Length: 139
Ligand code: ATP
Image (cartoon, rainbow, N blue to C red; front, side, top):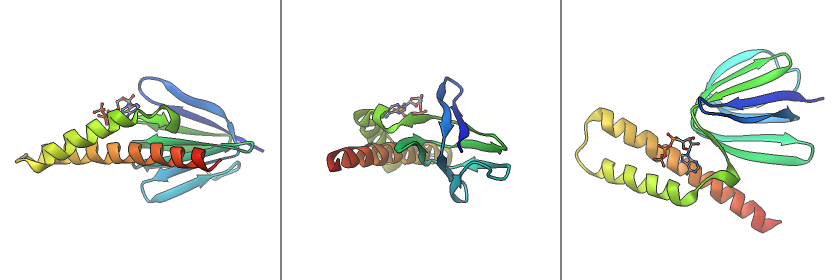
């Protein structure tokens, strides 16, 4: 038994397929959704999203959004979502450096909150890219 998973952003359909399980970064912690999961709606926080289809696991970085479970499908509306292999680590390093630089100076509360969110996204991307790199070197 499988469940249909659609991951969409404002820009594109990032993923659409039948999967065995999806584990998403819910606002209250990791949320595992299997076929026949009870309907629910929750916000997501920036974090890892993992899905499995057959024997294969796909790792993604997701920067927040919503997740809805209906009887036959899961829909993720994501702020941004990237598969681990599509993450540009150099770009994330640069985003991290910029955010840290902003935070080290004198900034308004609003700018600090924005820089902190950018820092969190960059650290997430670096973590997910690194996790994939480690896994591949273990194979
Ligand atoms: P940057 O400052 O590098 O743009 P950001 O955190 O501000 O980073 P987002 O606003 O979260 O970027 O995302 C904008 C778009 O760029 C999204 O489509 C997202 O998937 C993509 N994106 C952002 N950073 C990366 C990255 N390091 N590798 C691949 N895609 C990325």
